Amino acid sequence: MEKTSWLSDSKHLIFLSVSGCETNIFLVDCEGKELTKLTPKVQLSSSYWTILYLDPVKDILIASLDNMRNGTYAKMAILNNLKELIDSNTPMDEINGKANWNFININEGVNPMQKSIESLFNQKFHEKVLKYGNSEALFWTLENYDRFSEKYYEYFPSDQKLEPPETPSLKPLIVVVHGGPHWNLTGYVELKMFNLLRGYNILIPNFTGSCGYGQNHIENLLGKIGQVDVEEIIGFIKYSMKNSATLRRSL
Image (cartoon, rainbow, N blue to C red):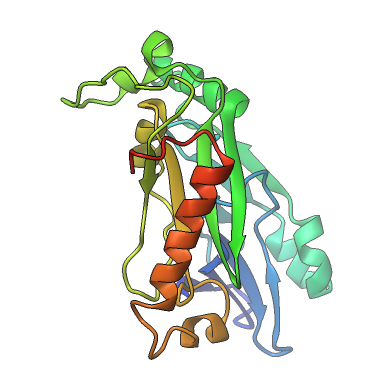
């Protein structure tokens, strides 16, 4: 839990927290001890919200939303009816559905490649949530994307040269493993986007011990570090190589 802020009534608190593969903004009624998610449901399981500002009088919340379909820039989101919902004693389980979020693309026109990359990811980016026991992983790929003809990777500065693939229909796999071990890999959209555009598939495992899945999921790793987490990561890799267009000899 981070970036906590009190609303003007001093009874409600908002905070940012990891839940599953995404980061969301939550609202707590500290008197009634109730909790609800403020952020709306988006298309992807890997969306990353950030609290930018909370007006201490009007309770206007300004946040940003970052995910793989937004292109290289995050979108700004403004929640302008939170005070109205609180003052009218809206039940906590109804606040999410009545929250009025307005999205603004503040970087519109800043870079001519931005729109092209955003359009490409809206059309070809594919996200799959993999399950292994009680853990999960994200598998990302750009479907029907030819890195040599489209060359969107050139938008990102790099001295790394692309080599022709041995098998054009197969892609090498990057496995992104977080540290901690009690952590969760969210954010860093541009780096992941760059590697997808260079022709890689990406696997992001949230193994046993990762945060965002409850206290039991964290404690289940105690005394088994280097065993159950490694087993799960290898299991996710094997599944990815068996069930996707992934080059088996390039990891």
